[in-house]
Each structure stands twice: as structure tokens, then as C-alpha cells.
Image (cartoon, rainbow, N blue to C red; front, side, top):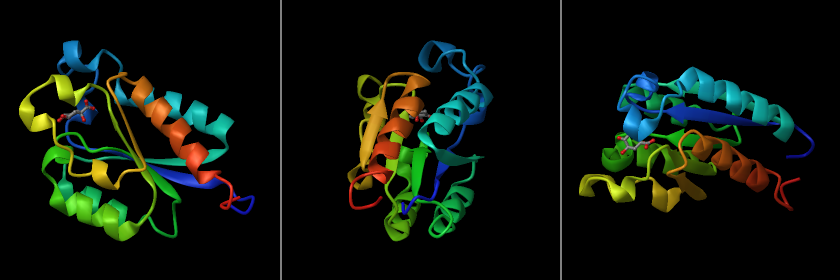
Length: 153
Ligand code: DQA
């Protein structure tokens, strides 16, 4: 990163604005705002700048990914249900060409079969799932390591 502070775009897909209210047995009680506070605290220690976007709209997420190159060095992505359906989001991530980590609060592999396939994961630098809010924190740590990797410093 040539000594610059790396910037990471954190994308949250549909229904993640309802965390804390939504299916608490699956997703826990923590709100998205609280997760973002914890991510911001960790980002300080990791010397990263974070930008957050939550959207229920596929096109808004695609727009955000398209505008990421030149502004951000990596992405932390919980695309929610679009993980399993969105060719458009996958294509945007492929076009952006930035390293990203896919995260999920739940473990989709122990849930319905339609959640077992991620269209994004084959492009991801890594995937963290099943640890609740900690998936985001672990994912950010992994992304920070990647961005600070030898050859990129
Ligand atoms: C999720 C898993 C998805 O299958 C689901 O559609 C979500 C949340 C998770 O974080 O566990 O909205 O991405």
C-alpha cells in the first residue's frame, strides 16, 4: 500500500438492516449499527479506513462495486440473499478486480439447499461464515493481512 492507509468498502445486502429484529435465532440480537461500531474499532487497530453501505437494491450494490476501484483497495461483502442469486453482483466484483472477503453471520451450509451455493465465493479471496457478527471481524482481519501482504507494501 506504499504507506497509505488502505480503504475498505463494507457492503451489506438486503434485509441486513433488520439485524437485531429479524430471525434472532439465526442471526442473533446484534444490530447492524453495533456491528459497524465494532468494525470501525477494529479498523483503527488495523490502520484501515472503512466505508459502509447497506442496500436492499441489487443495482445500488452493483453501482457501489463499480465505483470502488480508485477509491478503495478491498471489499468486505455480506450480500445476503444476493449471494445465492446475483450474477450482476458477481460480474461487478469480477470487473472491479479488487480483493474481497465474503462473510455471513449464519452458516448457509446447514440451512436450506438454495443457500448452499454462493455465486460470489469463487471470486473471493476468502469466505468467513457461521460466527455471527464475529464473521465480519474475522473477515476484516483477513482482508487487512491481504492488503498488507509483501509485494503490496
Ligand atoms: C446471510 C445468509 C443468506 O443466506 C441470507 O439470505 C441473509 C444473511 C448471513 O449473513 O448469514 O440475508 O448472508
